[in-house]
Image 1 (cartoon, rainbow, N blue to C red):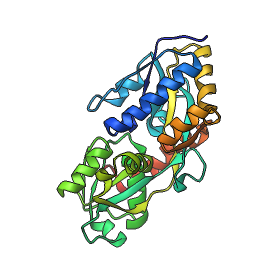
Image 2 (image 1 turned 60 degrees about the vertical axis):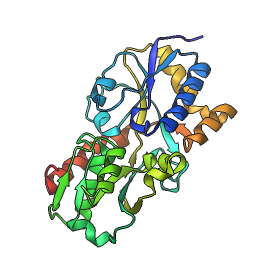
Image 3 (image 1 turned 135 degrees about the horizontal axis):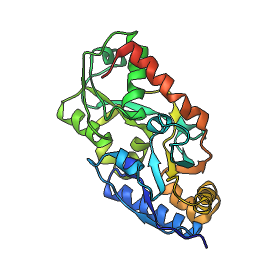
Length: 269
């Protein structure tokens, strides 16, 4: 049996207590099947994600693809696997996108997005910052946004800012939106999706470079085979996932160039 003291964390997708329990159940299954002792932690906001990603005891922790891509190859955490969502926008691939959302009870068209007040989460986020800027730039043809408001930290912050009227529109990670529709539909009931951004590689589960090769190999193998295990399959389904897949590292490596192109067009929000 492979054993190690390691942490597991789904901080990016700990959107509510109910959703957090589903992740805890999955990580407990992962520990049991892999033989790796995992402690599930919350690392709740506003604690910086950079602190989480720098921990030497990471065993299976979600990391956004954009900060992952910004690290030198020999400084990156070790990639384990990337989720494949059951949603139609995933098309059976380990990719995600962002939904552009506005208040359901306000008359708002796609054409209004050019003059809207935009909210963003944090600047090192693909889904909450780079993806909506890329979407906006394609609509506005280089025209600057009327007003941008942030950091709103996470999808819940975007939802609250729209509900309070602080912003007109914002971007929510499409997988986060999927989880909320599944488990907390009242949270997204006041919203409607106006558009969806271009796809990007899904945030991936990573392990610390200090973990032993045996631990990393066991976690990776168990994740990639989770959909073939009856219990694993059911736990994945509760999270809106079909499977975990081998990450396409080349796709992550293209994210910085996409961000720089938008910086050149729009500058910093």
